[in-house]
Image (cartoon, one colour):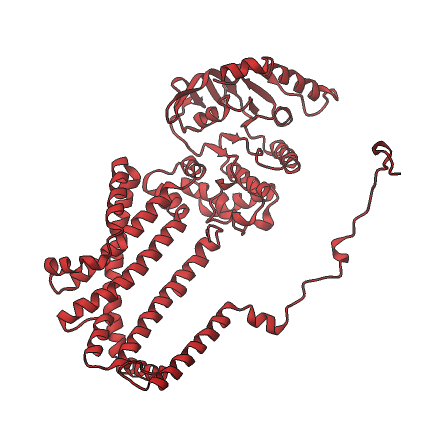
Length: 290
Length: 260
């Protein structure tokens, strides 16, 4: 028979001190450590892919269709050593930086207008809704008529590809800054530009960074595509021109080498530059959403 | 008493707009806060006590009456009235604990950096967070975040501290501990504060004087002295709690519902 509830005795116990527990953290085995390393696993995938490429290239045995991995690497090294590829990359990067910078600057002005006035906010929302779905490359023919075969045409297209995602994300970031943080900023006596710089921008930084990343991705892809079209007509230029030119002289390993360069630069900016900014800012601050 | 009140709220009616209503939050509320008061504004939810605190903070202007700090009418927010909010996200996530405490001092531009650093260390030490001073807020628990917010507000050495239910989002055990710590700090520094709460027990424990507001819209029901912290009869706090409870909930529930 279980005792009635009223008859159950009280219980007092002593706890063991934490220092007396035997189990401390035990390191994982070497194999586990290696297989847990994402970078190493991805490197293994890359090596396998390169091997498959090499074998398939040798099997096809046609440099005009599929140059082997080793031929591509040789072409890449040769183009780098001769200074041709770095020069083309530099031409592309220069135009990209100008366009990206101008796009971000215009986005800042537009967002400032949108944040301070209701009509500005309506304007920004209407413009982004209109222009965001329009691929920047579609504006290139128009740009060529307006600005001719000058870097200005490329910059115009780049600005269009950067402006809308950056402005849209920055604005929505500002709008979603918590009312408490806004009140805290006002409480310190912050107003105007100092309030924007010291409270709104850092508080909205996760959104702003997302906008900058999307803007970069759009700009980089747009630039290469634009150079392909632009390069055909201009007889000189950046990476896109290098690709189309080598295709025309049937130097296909060079085309592959240039494509490899496009991938490497894209990876570098997205996974090294932006990743570093992210770990140093929003991850450290605990503001990362993913 | 001939002493001039530090904060003088006279006849204040507050209204704010929601999507489709103009809501009267408080109606002709008046009270005075003197130096070193632990002034508690107590009332059920919807009595406009937080709105009243926001008006004292300078975030909104009264439609009637005025609020004066040291004789000056309050127009806008300012660091002479530091706020502590209920929400944990009141700390700037991109600054460490120390930077958070130093930031308002540096923004004002009146306190040189070395002095601000020294003051920040002193107040972080007072709330017992010296070990965490280089950590970012997201690594702290809720109670620790509120301690930082209190240290940050006190380090400014404002004329008055405005606390908007600072412990309401904490668990019961942490909340009691924080109340004790706040009283210890007051014993040491003798700051002046307005403390808004909806908990009668918290009001009696934390406050020296208690303003009771009625719900919808908030009007002054009573202004009582709290139980002295030492030398009071053992059941004085409980008796006062019962008395306040009766005053706030004197109306039958049905009548309240009919008005709401």
